[in-house]
Image 1 (tube, rainbow, N blue to C red):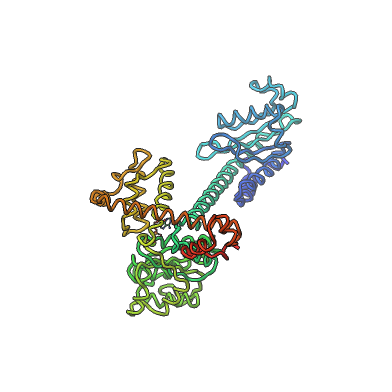
Image 2: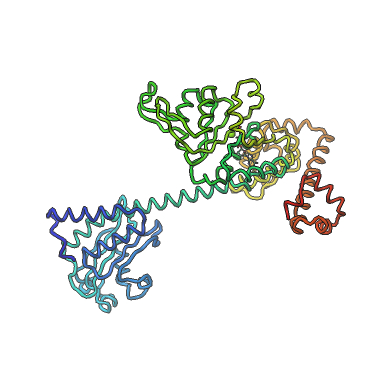
Length: 512
Ligand SMILES: Nc1ncnc2c1ncn2[C@@H]1O[C@H](COP(=O)(O)OP(=O)(O)OP(=O)(O)O)[C@@H](O)[C@H]1O
Ligand SMILES: [Mg+2]
């Protein structure tokens, strides 16, 4: 086939090269790129055997493809000569073309040259910005001078294209791997297990949220600032069938009406001064995914009507256009205001409220679920402990008591920030009151001994209740919801078990 290669100044030389390059550059997946490249170079060079290897930054083999060579051949002593040549190219980053390896001074002492009769060899570096990331290797064991100078020249030119195609395929693969890793991280972050809470109010909410995640129901999440509204919204998205499409958040309180409108619905060129080109709206970006409307209470009456239409039939217009567009989005909205009261006061549309509120999630403030403070502290100590490489951190009893008595107007976010800061400041394994914000320290200084005792008693009571609840659930799980046997396992009488189940809203049927 080497006869097909013409002189480099011949126009069919370039035509031929371009056609081969086109076939190669059409491939995007690393193994496909290598296979197409391998077949092409074997065909144009007439080589008996060939191999393309890609290395990682430490020089280890990342990918390889070979013709008439088996993977295991590469590790055999007979392949030593080829190794020597490949290593030389790796080191010097310069191509090698040997017409007769037997006469090559640096190789002729090698036993394998004569034993295997390796006569003709081409080995070329694959380079990106002058860095070697692979080699193309071709040889012929029977024909001396198998590769004519013009053949070598052609393969050398074509190798430039192999470099481009292989490097972009590698980059693409790395990007895909990176995205997959990020997606896994996101899924873990927004897995329901990552939402901490043992308080019955939260347990019930998580149960409800778990049930509705897979449905397309619109959800309205209400709660004070920092109670975890966005966390729940993301968990709903990442646990739904829409998870492979986008979760698109927008804060309705952060933009003036017309800007919010063009963000949400998009606009066409010339829709208003400054609209110099068409713009895709967030509804379109979220198509197939979830649109999270944060601070929905701040949406203007005009936009409320337009949003209602989207919820009713999925239709909307881009600003300045008369063409209806269709979208398929799940809408989750959140507010820290009492939307029902706004409806009563006619400052929020009632019909929209009912559309948004198909499922209603009301997140309690942290001060109303104090049981969870200890659990959240542990969670954030461990998360930030890993981040700052400070493992097994603890709070001193005084610091813990203080946090348990605090009202947390900023809810979980405030607690998270307090622990984050304390972990950064921690000098030993035990976090002291001094590492808590100054307003808390002042509060600590003002505590009377009596107050300290009662806070301690409260914390103790909370831990006992948590233990009791978990224990009763474990006993019911182990007896598959059989109350008589569960009472036996727990060593308490049936009446007592019933009263604990009632106290903690535990139903035996859940564990059947
Ligand atoms: N139950 C929880 N478990 C673990 N982390 C939580 C929990 N609730 C909230 N957080 C964390 O607290 C922080 C605040 O949560 P998020 O942003 O969801 O609150 P928000 O209600 O949307 O607040 P805002 O109204 O101020 O926007 C986040 O870092 C979130 O991960
Ligand atoms: Mg939020």
